[in-house]
Image 1 (cartoon, rainbow, N blue to C red):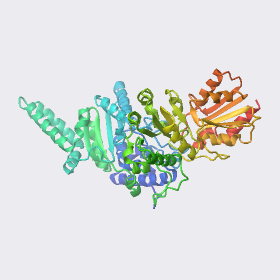
Image 2 (cartoon, rainbow, N blue to C red):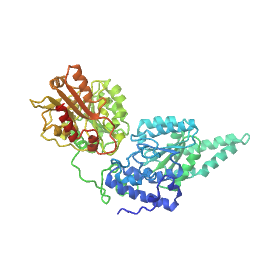
Image 3 (cartoon, rainbow, N blue to C red):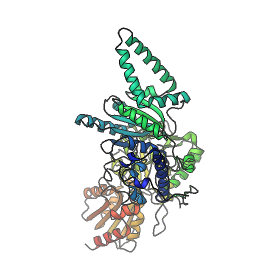
Length: 618
């Protein structure tokens, strides 16, 4: 049963308040925060397991540093809920990840304590490196702390940042939140005990004093110091197999520290503050800490819909494009052993769980490494495999160079299964899928499909794998299909026309949005056109549309670089003399539902209906 009395948490109105609490009150605060997170996320949905795992770590950060003078950069940022509760945003949590509520990721426009907009992985160290350097250049004595998980270390940008930051002399502290023990797998009792000693401020003071004394002893001092240093490093390499790796990059390594022990965390952070130059503080936490279901199934509770706290179960859904994709992939793999699936740490999110279980030798989770995933897929294709890379639209943005240079210019055939295309609910600006069409259109010989229904997704995926060469994208939204006002049976045609002989206007759309356009147009004297292959555009379609006085194009993607923009250019080049109107998404959607985002862009049924009506009577 969840508690409703939050006596300590209610006293936290700003980041300074946590520093006034006693040790017992701090322990109670951590318990109350976990209960509050469960109470909130069970109703709103959100990222639960990661947030439950960093409660003590976040409290210790707020106790040890002075925000906003000191700055924290959260990698990915989905684990910032406790941070937001400690910075005066508790009241907004009832609308977590909803319109006009608290965002699920750091947002400086919410609080000056959110130092950097984050939403994608592996960026924190690079950003913190730059921020710390700027402080040094301006004489600011504040600290910059990057909090990065072991999962984010599967992304290449993390290593680029670590490599460069390790050479600095700035007040930079990198906290490695190791919640799967994926880095130090051989740490026993002695290592843990020594780690506690090393993390105490007095240890650092003693070590520095000893070094100074030894170095000033004539003749014997320096050799003794070097011998002790060599012995110490040898012991550390034996006990901490990875600490030397960080130290070789230029960091003072501290840890591993129990990430749920407030005293140990605060001691370690104080030690880190006393060190000149970059520090790597290795903290071990448990994902889902305090909630048995999240501890047992952290992947399920990574990003979860509203759920029953007592059972851990979410409400049964009515299917989704992601699930349809996964089912289709299993069928295709059963038919053809060349079919492979690739995911960048999103096996469950992209619907590939069953595929991974049934065809584990042909399912490759490459970690948070979208760039590698594309080049790896191109390598598979080079030797006659049929790779399908399932990726969220927002994360595919990282792979542009690899799609162009390592795939298109190599003339290899890969399929990009682009999930979360279009307006994406809840996660806000950093996760919107409205930019894949504009950048994919610039790739030589690319083909893009955008299905409207589950059946069409299955058909387009087969078509993409077997009937088209080069880079082929199949893009589809988060969630389920939207009902059409008529029966639709997909075929292999590039476009479908519902012609009205008397119509002088044509209305075009594709993907999920086509459902809204079809409903808006059904009682009007217009020809309805649905693009199945949305790019490249067929010359036959251009010729067809030239015969109309007015052409309207509605699409769920960025207006700049859109298919509608490309079609307008084609019509102009081919002598079209009529009116051409287009409507897309002009601004990046903020935190809301997909329906609300489309309403804001005037792409809901009512707005499109009014738009068509106005165009007919101009």
